[in-house]
Length: 461
Image (cartoon, rainbow, N blue to C red):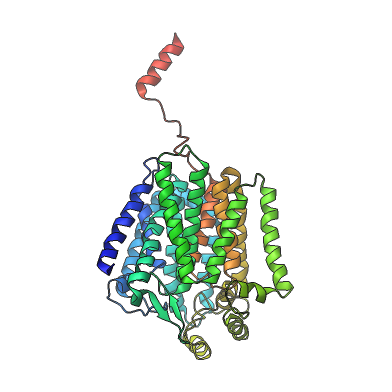
């Protein structure tokens, strides 16, 4: 089959997924397309690259944004701000429930006072506000659960089939080689790790919807929606195998296990014991020196594919241990040049906590722990109201803790960070702020005037 026929089948298949998944009972605004477009770009490639107006080699994610990319990002952020202003009451309530997120963004801006490249850091900070804006747009919808489902579906229905299409029929656009000559798969992205993390996050969202459809047999058009979500879940599993990203694959398995286990738990105390046992088990593996055996079982070298050597060099770098070098400014200038001489092509530490420490110091690491802690706390509160949704949000928060041990997932403008912010704010919305009644439990509407008038006459009689 030639590429042209494959593109036609891709278009028909994507349209078919949207058709099968349609749900007339869900009510979401047109603004929901704004974060969908934002994530399509964040989890793939810049618009200028897709249109051929810019150059970015596959595997290179450090290219400067073009004017077109900046304009698109600015437009999406502007539209998102309009939505937030229109929903300012609920937006403020959500930010209060997820206050560590707002505090972390504020400290990132403050840290630039100590930076040797504040101009670059300020540009990155302004752009990173888009992640917060998009998360707010989703969770402030009148039906946030329906908004989450549509966000997951709309992004995965396009990104997953597109990755498979590029890998199978456009290899020059989806494959790249490391400096050592190793062939890697990027799919719609420019890096296998970005492909892996975006896939595992959306695949968990698809699994959540499959489990919800299996559990609730009274949902309208349940079977065709189940077909659509099961199909996209299978696509996600195939991509995880193709990408060969050990961290993303292990994170999906871990997250899926958590969701399945938590969804069967009745009490939050049992949930705490489960999560604590898993985290302690991971710590025990490291304490007993079994990490090498585990990493080899995942298909990696005992040195985590060179990561331990990178960490040793970075830990010896001269940075401010309290506030770091300033938001997103460690990997610039002479420091970036030095690290590239030692490790060609590197632009991150492959450890989220270390990356935060380099840029934001001990205060930044403490704030990240606070964000994750608040996210877990509110996810448990959401679990008390909706066990399936609480299981999903808890899985996102807990997998973020483990994913960032070998990947820099706390870096803004990346899929993992977007989902961390989304999970924390969504957990606050469901667990603390409250939500509108679901379509299956419609809110009580005021009676028409004539009915109220007749009721009054009856009461008088």
